[in-house]
Length: 161
Picture 1 (cartoon, rainbow, N blue to C red):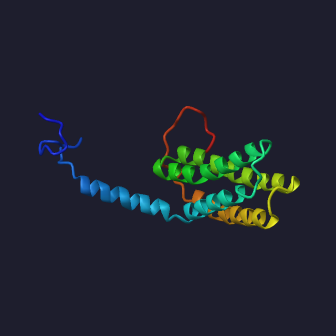
Picture 2: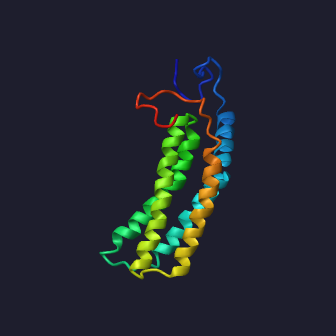
Picture 3: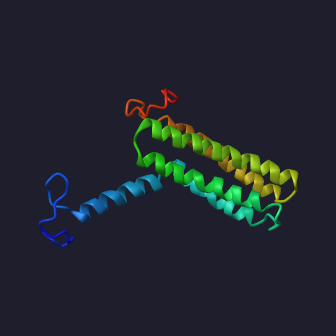
């Protein structure tokens, strides 16, 4: 038996012929669903705001860490939303949600650091704070959709139950 993708004898794990087009369509639909979630749309907006905001911070060696940390925190948010949606297990979704919350709160803290050192325009900082606050509302609604009954014990205790 050949394992060539074009081989008509190639079957999936259920003994049915592989249908790459159908699988691709399902994956595309799922990706589109996740990309269009209000929480994801706002997460990407926050990333765009942070990307623009860090460009206003001087490229001083003492401030480089702040620029990098802000970009990292902003990138974590949409990545963890996608991760939570990809694994439909309650504990995994909640772990991602906690990381999202920490990153979003860190971004707000960074805005006060920027203000304290007078290194960015206050309008940009307020724009980011407003976006994070809008995100928070969407985030709470999104987390409330997590199905607690769909879980697998991970032997790390009852943290999210």
